[in-house]
View (cartoon, rainbow, N blue to C red):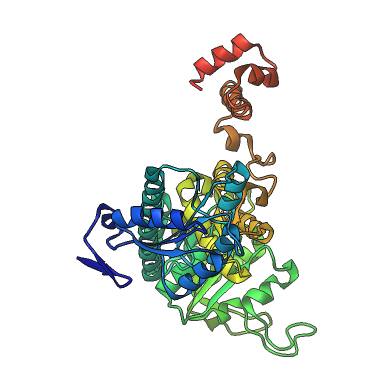
Length: 474
């Protein structure tokens, strides 16, 4: 025998899904409907409470945890949609299922938009109710499993000190494992990857595992410091070194002593400063501008770039000896389009974090929004994804991010990217095949599978379209 909410019952097939007797609140202004549902659900292993209208339901919800709420839409006073909104606003985890004798597609869509799990139209067969509830229970089981995996991932992040980084894919797990190995040594690390992939987050993880959280971490964008200030910013200056130097000032290296200096966009550093940086790396000392004596520093240097440093070396824009000194160990972060399985976990992470910051907790992605996000190739990577979701949260009125809340250009290709990024080849013959297949696929999708209409849009004959569909196995 198992007990929940003060009731005892024998273990049923329903209980086997979650391990406890599920509690359900039936809300309907028709007494016969409430009693019929209560009888059905009790016989099938549910602990059932009843309410005749929305206000009574809220009172019950305030004093007791329910797994499910099965509510009519049309009720006197507080109707079903208003009840749904208040349940969600309260932070309740109860899964809400709506039912109505006046069901329309529009009402169903509105209920789903506001956060209802499903919708049943009256009159319904009793098996329909049980089927929907069992589907909801399976979803709850998956949600709990997902939560468990998230907690394990967070624990892994804490242990490996890569705080804030989400990556369940094999590609990102390989990055984390590689970084964890090199973090324990003071070797210089060159972190490479496209803009927005999270290079600074990796650098902070390396720092925390290596030098420790309490040690200084100093980050500088090498392309963001004015050229005439670069040397004094990096190495500091002595009093009287130049006009306006009325006091001594420590540079970035001294500020990072006993800690880590992260040189972002190292490929933007001028050649004359590259020479002095190389000396610091080799000798472990800096000389302030205008000073005579050097100062010893104990700094671990991490560098990052989204440029091809080897190509810059070949062009004479980056010193070869500095490149090899920086590239003792390379950690490459793949672009988001190469590990799309991380996209939805990242969305969940950002929706939770941004929702807390913006006072919009419990935000979820509608299926259509997920489709648009997965179709985009993310040239701006994780940074672009975060910006898109922040915009969506601002526009969303309910608890669901819909496709129209996402940027209009989402899914459109960035025409400034290189041709081989589009096609994976510079062969005109292969590129033509790739583009033709893509256009035919999009036309068929746009026309809902109507081949005649798709042929018109593509401006080819119907037989030609049939032939290409067969060739491309579409």
